[in-house]
Image (cartoon, rainbow, N blue to C red; front, side, top):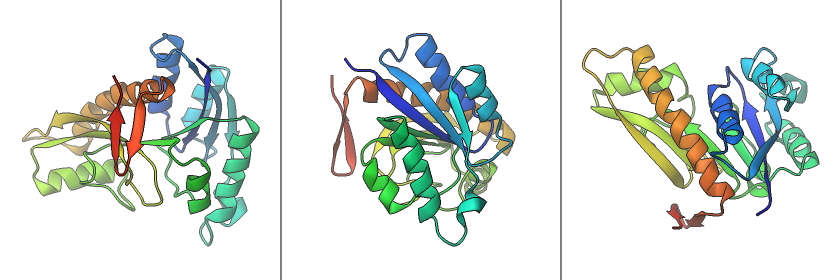
Length: 212
C-alpha cells in the first residue's frame, strides 16, 4: 500500500494538526506522512508544531495575493505548493479561509475538513471557533459535537465522513463546550484520515460509504 502524502492547511494553534501527527507517529495511521503544513497566519503555533515534528512549514500571506478582493490567486499559490510535494490528501485543520472552486476541483474528493458542530447545523460563513459554540448555546440545543467532511465549493458543506456527539450541559460556557468538542475532534479527525488512507471511503452523491 502506497504512502499517502498529506498537506495540512492551518490558521491557528494546530491542536488537530498535533492529533494527526501523533496518530501517524503512534502507528494508528500507518501508511501516511505529512509532507507540508501551510499557514495563513505568520504567528500560528501550528507552524511551530510542524517544525518540531520535522515537517516543512510555510507561511503564505493572503494579503500578498489580494485575498480580500479575489480568492483565486491565493488558492492558486497554495495549490502550487501542495502539488510540488505531490500531496494526495489535503486536511484543513482550523484553516479559516475559503478555497477557490479551482482548488476544490483540483483536489476533488481529497480535501477533508473538521468542524466543531454537528453539520449541517451551525455551519456556514463566519461560523468558526467560539462563534459556533455561542450559537449552539443560544439555540438551546441539547447536543453538539464535531463533524469531519469532504470539502466542496460551499462553506461547511460536502459529504460527511464521521461525527461525534457531546451533550450540552445546562450551565455550559462556550469555553467548556469547546473543550469537550475538541477532545472528540482529536479522535474523529485522525480516524477519518486513517479510513481515507486505507481506501475505505467512497463518495456516492452526497453520502460517504465506509467499506468494511
